[in-house]
Amino acid sequence: MSATPKAVSRLIEAFGRLPGIGPKTASRLTYYLLRAGQEDARLLGEALLDLHAHTVLCSVCCNVSETDPCALCADPARDRSMICVVEQPLDVLAIENTGRYKGLYHVLHGHISPMERIGPDELHMQELVHRLGGEVREVIVATNPTLEGDATAMYLARLLEPLGVTVTRLALGLPRGGDLEYADRVTLAEALAGRRKME
Amino acid sequence: MSATPKAVSRLIEAFGRLPGIGPKTASRLTYYLLRAGQEDARLLGEALLDLHAHTVLCSVCCNVSETDPCALCADPARDRSMICVVEQPLDVLAIENTGRYKGLYHVLHGHISPMERIGPDELHMQELVHRLGGEVREVIVATNPTLEGDATAMYLARLLEPLGVTVTRLALGLPRGGDLEYADRVTLAEALAGRRKME
Image 1 (cartoon, each protein chain N blue to C red):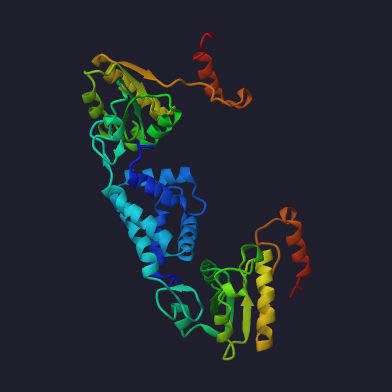
Image 2: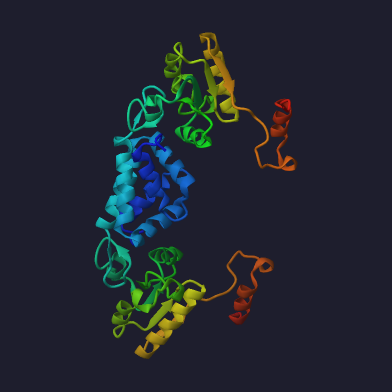
């Protein structure tokens, strides 16, 4: 369309490459920024250009960080006897937000998925193996409760248990605040199988 | 959260300022770009920084453009006897996509809205008035079929008709492909009131 300036269609295209943003949303965001003025576009643009320049992967836990090692790995107050293994950096935030975990983390950056051709070598598993042997007693596998998360957890259990650590997995069951009547069959079965004695 | 690098939280915040993007989506987009690699973030970042630098408002029709006057206003093939008035630049694209309009445009960049404190002076109406007097015979008001769009259309009709042009408005009625049964009462009433003799 000759009516669209190149700078506009270029931004629409770039927005459209993001997950969950289709061509309509991409146009709307672009024209919003045109209306909103230069400041908003500049802030977002500079933040994008700085993103990779100002972040590294922590060489210990492989989380995205400003420093190496990251603030969590460097924090002397964290319990060094446990490592919680997650798929993505956002999962670290989710667990931190519970306020109930004081150990260390390890970020795999994905899960085992033969369909997507992701095997153990594509994940940060060797870095995890290298962390064992010292104070670490327990590895809590907090991969997603999905087929791929299960496969990854199983692989990790077989890989790490021979190295002398206890490998545990997050509990499956009914989500707090949920309704038994609306729970899916699989979740209900897991909740039943995982039932615990009341104290 | 000390666990989040500043470059990451800055981008999350900048994404979160966009309309329709909440904090969760903003995090997801940011961590997606971290995973996707530097190229995607760079493309989007540069497109954002170029957006305002490489666009101007056409001094004739007030549409967003690379050049002044814009490609549409400069096109000798367009019919200079009609001007279609729209609220936003995206509306120009929508009408161009019909392939049924060969006249010129005028972009108001908004609508009259006492609630949002937008009066006629906040819109590009004087620029429209200055375009009349020459070849222009008809002004087609294509503001949205909303309260604000109606108010804007009414104001324009009263402003422009004394200047010797015919002011028309887009037809209201049933959307093509819609179902009478599911049409809302107001739309159906408009369709009834606007009924036309079959030929």
